[in-house]
Image 1 (cartoon, rainbow, N blue to C red):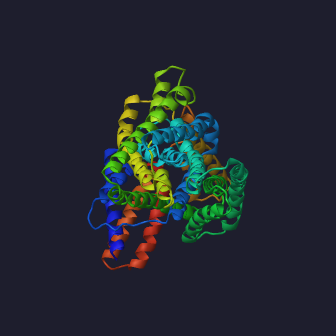
Image 2 (cartoon, one colour):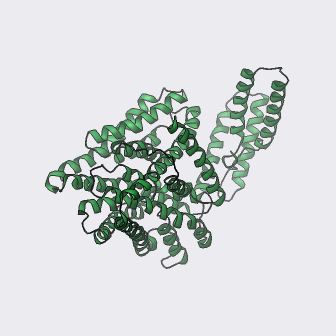
Image 3 (cartoon, rainbow, N blue to C red):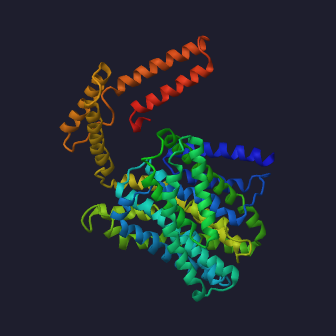
Length: 511
């Protein structure tokens, strides 16, 4: 009962902190990290511990499935050089740099443990960066690079993490024994993910009930991860490639009702997972500090500060001379916009859920586990506060140019869609309602033809009037319910009909 009460209070606090972050234009994970740290020093907080073997599956499987579903293969192909440079090159360099710093500060730390610590703090988290982008403009190409980096660097860092943790716990690393199965596992993951996605879409294409469809999605996320781990494959690569293939195959076969409900459920799930991860790691800080004596506490603080500075400086040093000045495509070499792009991407390297989950997943027998968990949390907290709270002002100051490629493509595609809809109506039955709909689409297409880029308007001409009519109808039905002329069941049925009609008449930005 105590744990249930604390869970309710934590979720309520998380909602309040998220609302505050939205008002300030800051990433909500920054406030969750602060809240998690504060919980560590609140008397009476249950000292919950999560089985390390479950941490990665619980936190990363759904996060990666959601991120992989949103990834754009076309955009990733266009930006593959900077994405690969950040997702692999920056992760490897950061891991090695942190390992060196850790060995300098803690000379007795085994090399494998130091490399594992580097792999834990190496991958930035796109959730925090994208939360900032809701309040500050960033060119679409840079946002695509950040999304792609976050998706692929998880795989790179966790592969290093697995190898280093195994070597640290076993007391040694033998490349000739590990390399063949490791490479086979990576190759198998890249093949298994897409094949399983094709099978999943074929099996679930007839599922139209939203709750059933959503449950199957979560079963797929956790089931794929657990199966991949059992078969010595990469859970990250299997889940990510599975999600990217499903995103390509599912739109034509998924029922609209299930899709709309699914998006809402997954947004909520990602939020709750972030809350739980930051709370679980936050409440471990006080017991960790209690287990360390005075000298060890200072060593932990020094190591955490040194690692945080290292990951920040290494990212800047990697981005500006390489991808930042060459691969972002915002102007000629040396232009202020190109330098600004490098500054924006280098400063968008906040650590988040992946680092937290990897730290929680460290085995109890891991050398210097408390030190690694404390360092990881301080790095996450420091990056979310320092970079997360200043990224939005930096973007506003840089005013990076953006030619709105998504808006252009959506406008032209909308015109083509309206044209196809009108063509289907031309062969339809002649009646007053069909004539009115034809006239509406013709008006929208005439606006597209008059537009210099052929963009159609975001809403049909009658949508404003349609919304007003729906509001009037909704008000009338609500009044009938209050007066007892209709019951609650009839009201809820009509309310759902009006909701769908209003969504259909409302542009996305007003939804």
